[in-house]
Length: 234
Image (cartoon, rainbow, N blue to C red; front, top):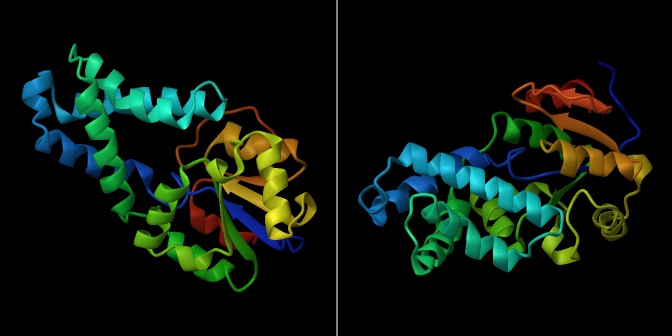
């Protein structure tokens, strides 16, 4: 594939795109499962609890992205609802699990394969930025602990702007903060709705990072299954 030369700015999503959310989250959940004796309390296994929590967390984040719940509700409800799925009604434990999860998970350092190699290649050629729906303090810890922070000029969170991807104002404000424009920028992310459709609706090129090869009918600028494929056109 021929190199595309019009880009000056590259915006990366963080979770699931560079920072290995799946691995890091699972490590945190396993630690909490043992610490709070959830096998005995809930009568289940770590695998079943993890699947239940992930399903509920994904549902809550979808509502958060679309403005149906706020940060406080997301945080107070996700572990509470996961416990309730096993008929364990304990709001206090839910709050404790959420608080400790947000202390443990961001300090994990697993990255998506080829992340560092790709960033080392891109950073001399482009201005790199993070554009994420994650919470500001949590994302900063992830970037610092994993060694990713030095690669990025700007880290822009939906929390700092007050609008989530895929809504247009977060992309527009990102352009203002970085001096970028839709014409000289590209968005790279794993979420088809938040990252890809959101960027496309602003007139911005997109790279859909689709490691599982999930079928879809969206018109995307580029699609890759491995990050190192970026080296063939950027």
